[in-house]
Image (cartoon, rainbow, N blue to C red; front, side, top):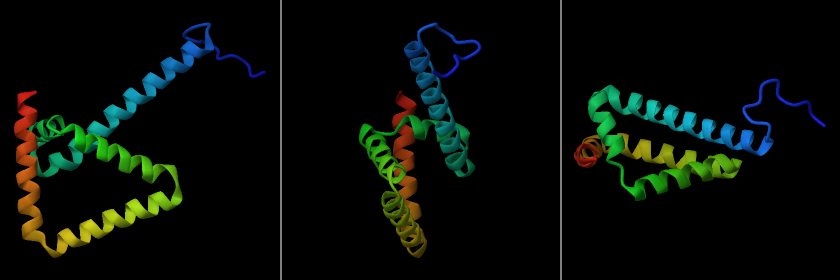
Length: 117
C-alpha cells in the first residue's frame, strides 16, 4: 500500500483526487487562455484577443476540443491532425491575401460577439 501524502487536503482519498482533478483542469484552462491570447494578441492586441476568445461559438469550442482529443489519443491521430494543420497552413500561405481577409473578418465577428458577453 502506498504511503499517504504528507499533508492531504482531506482524509478521504477520493476527495483529494477530485480536488487534484479540478485544480489541474483549471490550471490547464488558464494556460490555454494565456497561450491563445499570446498567439492572437501579438497581431491584434491583448484586449481584442480576449474578446475574440470570449466570442467563440459553442461549435468552434467543440470542434477544437474534438481535434485536440484525436491528436492526443494516438500517434496516428497526431499524424493526421498535424498533417491537416500543416496542409492548411501551406494552403493559407499560397493564398495569403484571401486567407488574411477571411481570417480578419472571422476574428472581427468573434470580437464583436465577445464584447457582448
